[in-house]
Image (cartoon, rainbow over all chains, first blue to last red; front, side, top):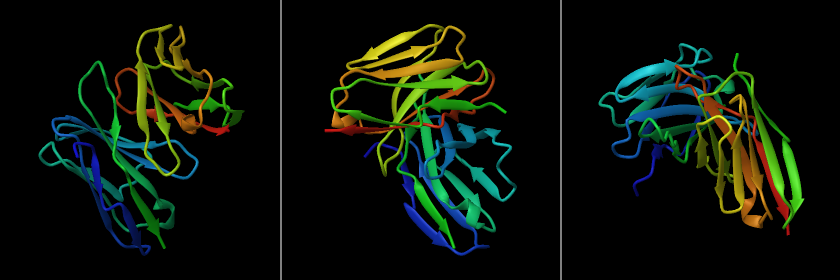
Length: 114
Length: 111
């Protein structure tokens, strides 16, 4: 399978716990995005990487959220001290090229904070 | 802040009828992308428009980008049950890669 993969697909945690999600983009895609989507809403931008550099981060993202892309390949999104409001689908997308910025989305990680 | 609204929020059509969703941005966009998301699925890229006034067609789907690059539309001719899903537009402004997704239009097609 050469698509974007995410792990885990589902995560249930208790409030206050830390969680980490992983995204493996399509090979050779240099751009990687993280989004959050709640029921009935469109994906909400969280952060953007070009290779290993985190070039953009949403101001809505509190300091409890951090993302990395250490070698410009896979990426991780960590949420510290989770809150019930963090419950959502976390989507990763990757793309390649400047003229055609097609974003290929992964299946997402569904987080439920109890 | 930048907002992207879509209308209508919901649309129910009989199979064979046409469908249009409109996307309106509060700011000028560098490009506009359209995605389809099936229930329980993830967004799937449909098309990207870049030029002012651009029109693109994909079989029964017609996409337009407004002259001012602040609005766009997606028109589906003769809907089929396979068209069911939520259609999102998304775009970013010059100098940023922060894609803002629209509020989405959920399409139901009645057989």
